[in-house]
Image 1 (cartoon, rainbow, N blue to C red):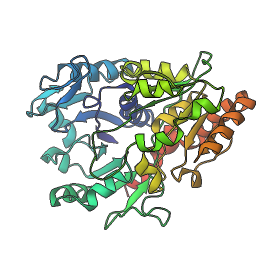
Image 2: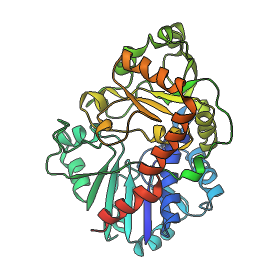
Image 3: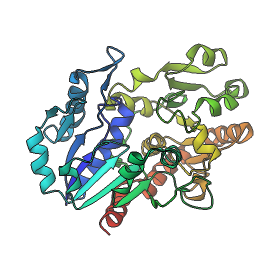
Amino acid sequence: MRILFAGIIARYPFGGVTWCSLMYLLGLRALGHEVFYIEDTGECVYDPVQNTRATDPAYGTAYIHNALEPFGLGDRWSFVNYDGSHHGRSAEDVVRYAAGADLFINLSGGSWFWRDEYTRIPRKVFIDSDPAFTQLAIAKAEPWYVEFFRRFDHLFTFGSNIGTPASPIPTGAFTWHKTWQPITMDDWRADRAPRDRFTTVMTWQMESFADVGGNKDSEFVKFIELPSRTSQRLELAINGPQQLLRRHGWDTVDAMAVSRTPADYRAFIHGSKAEFGVAKHTYVVHRSGWFSDRTECYLASGRPALVQDTGWTAHLPCGEGLLAFSNMDTTLDGIARINADYDRHARRAIDVAREHFDARVVLPKLIEVACS
């Protein structure tokens, strides 16, 4: 099958976001499909060197190339700048590829346009990585936004409870199929011993969907005293209030620095003993069933994960390798359980990733629905 895949690598040029698209591309290719990456959001790229949105896409386009080239995809991409100019492969190349494409996959708004070449592709799907936020935005959106989603043949979401009685999130006339971020397991095999740190990579507040939901900060403050309750060192890679967090005993590093490239991001995870991850308030309060692509990478690396329950516990194994918390007591219990038998939890973490998130498990199911 020939697939045109839209992602947001240049829009958010950091390791975690890059791996999301990259693992789709690599996973689909490994299954025998032909892939081509397109980015067409209509927005300027973020340039972390200048710390600004840049009208010159040079940083973003170099970043895409440097991320894809080591995997043999250096000539399999095109970036459409806000002014409509194409970088990487030409507009003509994109039109030619799309003319023979069988499937268009749009991850997280990798394109907000319905250009003729995309529209003519026989099958078109959208993958929602921000469950609850996306559906709330659709419910209050202007007609053009609703129409944008109507033009897909199928919609997928990382929110395993969306559209079920377990979550009050409105879905209207839309059906959301459940999926997980696919993990290319071989890319996450760790060959180094971890430091004695429970870590995570997080954004304190996000800029998108500001009018429909709550961010991670409003959940995290419930656990801000955690370092005073445990002897386990806790480290956050965060673009948030580092001085405040340090005063409460957290070790902090700059999230952008540890996420500058896909290799940097992976190295940070591999250097971690386990993950401690708090979810965004909207994921939690609406019981969306969201599960983090970042947590999947920890698990695939053989790093146990202790993460906040958003309703995902109804769909994934919980207790060995992957543990859930909902309050301070269950958090402390989870830390103690992981440390009491770390090697067993580390082995089980890989098993959970292989059984539930391996691209060879996730992607055939997605393709089956997409082609139905």
